[in-house]
Image (tube, rainbow, N blue to C red; front, side):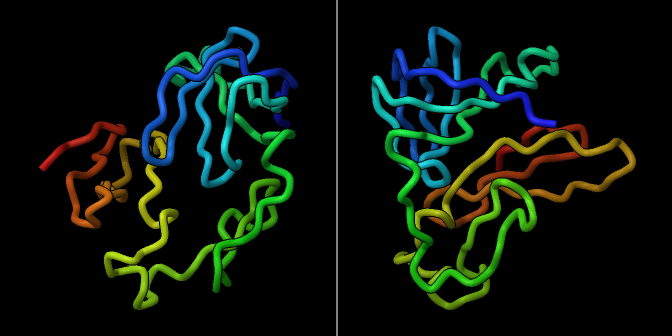
Length: 150
């Protein structure tokens, strides 16, 4: 079950490509605007507080779940037809990774989205790679969730 809390954005401290560091009612939070829409000071939002409240080592922050002020009228990416996170509250349509436009410089911004990846079980082999906005591999996530830059 999700642990969600409603609040207001009280500070925006950093904007990176695909990630915003902010505070909701004074608590540190991160937002992924390509999933939740743009975020600004004073926005009414819902955040997932579960990892922080359970002390799971999430980095000490909540995660923006939905922006009630700006995120309710978002449209799917043009020509998107593949569902990510299907049958979950975060299902959303994206373009297929192998489509020709995904590999060129005109690739949509969502192709460059970086999100934290939870550590893999020790018995698993490395499975995730990091791609920089230039679309070239810049490193990989190894067993145990460590990042190895190239």
